[in-house]
Image 1 (spheres, one colour):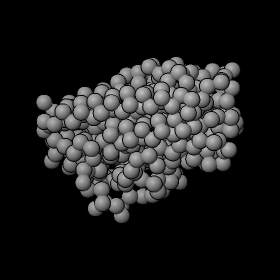
Image 2: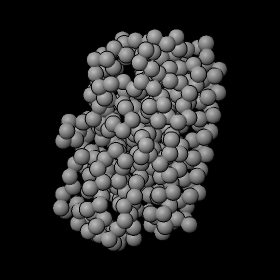
Image 3: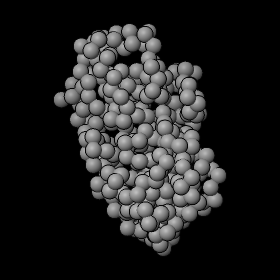
Length: 328
């Protein structure tokens, strides 16, 4: 899902394995809560932040994620236990504007190192109900709601930066520098780990560029507007059924508009997410003779994910997009 959520379940994640971080190295346990491990303790708001912390921190960090596997990050409400974990941690890594309860809890915590991923790259406005198209963000700027009907504040722009490998790499570099400053004894390892991660993200970016280069259409339909940065990066147009909030029901006029777009632009597929109901996508697809498929916003890894970590799921997304866009 995207730009929508609030996160954080009432129970802190207790093991990296439970999070589904198949390739991650650090782990947490019930007996080793943040602050009790002897490692550099990092509390991450949700999977994309925890993934960065694990890859960059390696064996030197102990990462606790506030959002459990399968939980919609936007719906997270911080528990008293998680608030206590924040107070005991060495660092907090989050993305301001995505999970209001997390923003509030971190803002009020005495934690020494607070790393806001939104400050490490450039956020833009995406997700209006007329779609997100490369180079057209400004012309739709006045139509973007800064706060959705559930009170979720998106004033800082679209938070789904991790779905653009280039922006995610910028965030990774910033996180690496923050880790080096906060834990200088292991700065060399953090620097090396960051460089390796950035290299992998550049490779992923190249796979998307070459994989989507020869396509029949630029337009793809999604249940909610989480892929604005990805669309902008690779010259695509995202048409979202429900805007930034995945729980918003589309109007009849919007459904008719999407049916027209699908016919005119040769759209074949309506994408839905693993953590959100596929009902709306299947209804629209059924009415227009389209098929449905998963385009994962990588907000969490579960047994239903098409991969065990960020890179595997993103490559699965590329495969799905290539098929939907008629890429050769």
